[in-house]
Image (cartoon, rainbow, N blue to C red; front, side, top):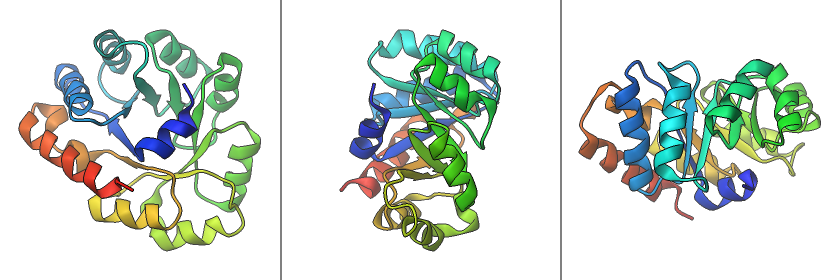
Length: 206
């Protein structure tokens, strides 16, 4: 899988994290059925590895299913074993180097210019600008000037309106958690999740 191509094509990364494994798995499958083609399951959610395994079995080997909040080398290894085909970190972490050893693309978290340089030099496929809400689209625009070749994916506080603003300022994609998932990870209405997915897919459409 070419993660950068997937990000540029689909422009939306859904982030699933929750206390109820069955509900979280159902949310992953509902998002996929709704046309969301990039999904990250955070390792901080309940039974995240089990969710990744079951989602991989249901969605097949070609679906872009990743693991998020991957910090340690062990996190990277167990996520890969569970079926994750890309990794996401909230910050610069040992998992970045381990992803390279495993041959997995990684979306590495960074906020400052120095961290952006470290993420890129460490082999990150793209930089997760996190938490994006601290600087907003204007901060992303400022970062684009010294780093025109860096693929940025803002994450943190991105709603449907904000998604369009970030993309207009040069993001290759946006990562969205609770504004998209809502209460679905706690057993909420799947029809409402499908509606939110449709709204976000419309917002990120080129």
